[in-house]
Image (cartoon, rainbow, N blue to C red; front, top):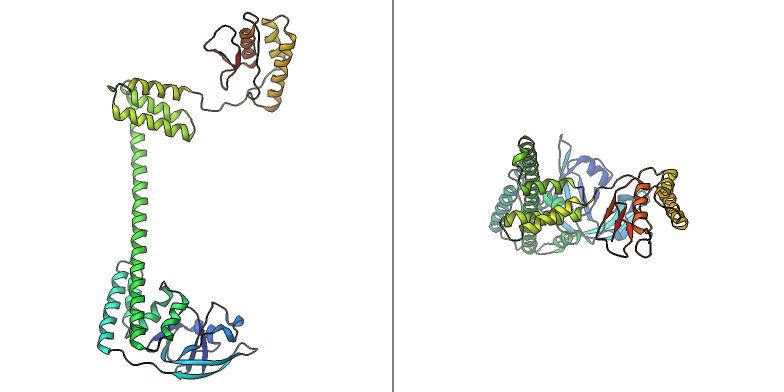
Length: 386
């Protein structure tokens, strides 16, 4: 006799349980032989044979017989009846000894009802398999399904139920109640599989739409660029802004806002009262220096010469400027501290700013000049006069 521990499987009386010969040997420690009796123990947890103890099993199991050992490497076990298990002992060599008694079923199942249900369940499973790559394989096995118990044993690895729920079926004494629970379990699992399959198909369809949309947009963009290159005189104002927006090199946040305004301009048209304002805003946005420029090498001698060429005296001011330029040169960055020049009008605040721009080899931008204003460093234009 072979003793076979099973976990997360449905092995009910009346079922034919198919296992690979290698799996049978691993579970029982014996070669399969036709006619051998098999005691099936239901494990509480997923444990290897070497880790099993007397408390690893439920108190109800099943007894069966090896009905077939075929050349394809499969073993068929006919599950015959339920058994009550007591006094399990795990030996040092991982073999088992125990006391078992037959456990009776309440024979209240209508055979005709069972046959009708079996047909319905088989049709439902085969319907689900249509179009699947494993459809032919499933149909070849379905030809041998002669009871709902066998269907459950075959489908057991794919059912969305817990090990405890599987054991509840075995613990039920009434064959009719057990049958009804099994039917509901199988049908619910098929519905869940349908929902999952439909969700995956919908997700795949959404992805394919996104890929197709992206491909079409890229193709349109490529063709539009070709047309613009062939007929630059026909490029519209909106298209000009669109090109500037994409080529400005701005960050994602600014680009998103720019596209939002551009779409608004497209929607309202050139005759809209706000079109001029939107166009000016986009022109300003795209003209800003978004791309980071590499720091240029600064010559301290040239910087000193530029400052001395335009200004006599002001040694304290020029010294502080040269200190700042030296720090920028060492750090490799032409940004950082802000130098503030305070003084009465005509004392040279603006001109010192122009000299600093020359010392750095950068453009000087004067904006909004007014009495008492002083220049300060701008991120791209060296100095700005307010």
